[in-house]
Length: 243
Image (cartoon, rainbow, N blue to C red; front, side, top):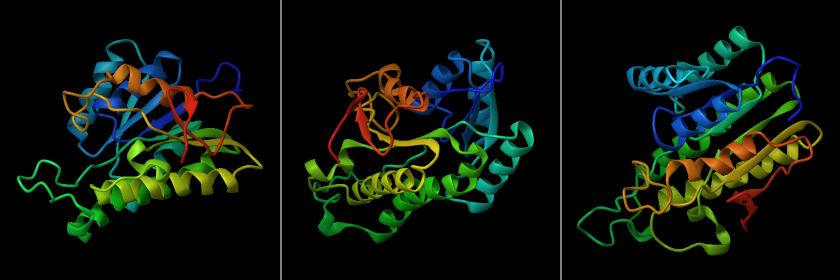
């Protein structure tokens, strides 16, 4: 990305008090970006941001509930007042609410799908990123990077049963990526989806095969693409993958 000389780029990372979000904040800040770490829980968020500041990184905290339009607007107002612009938005906040650990093996079947679980999944995983883009893209002033945290479970080319709330939401998030990229193609804003792989986080569990450092690598790569980089794509390990 081209930048304003001697002015750090500004990044917002959602759901960032732990896991992939926290590691993304760390890696972006190590590259010299000023990072706004957001989370619903102020205590956990500020503690996470302070831990990165203690390591000499420029990381600020701001509360954000991605399911609350007023919270999103407060964040946008803060970014505009504090920095006057935004360069990077990483839509990392997400939930996996399907009952995988239920005693009933069929509890997560599409035939047993609970619509409230689907609605809550969509609220966080799709509508939140949509509202954040509506509020924050104007602050990018025609140049910036948007990274949407998706999953291989949202690939139509490899779709299986189970976990309808999560799968529906990630398919829809990928559609949002394509729509944003199309409507922003006349600008220098790049919009991409990323599958970080199976990562050892609270969501991924201890048996996942990837550390958070590896999972965050492609996120950070997409967040710092040059102006001739791709837009409207789906990536894993810095390689395009099928939708």
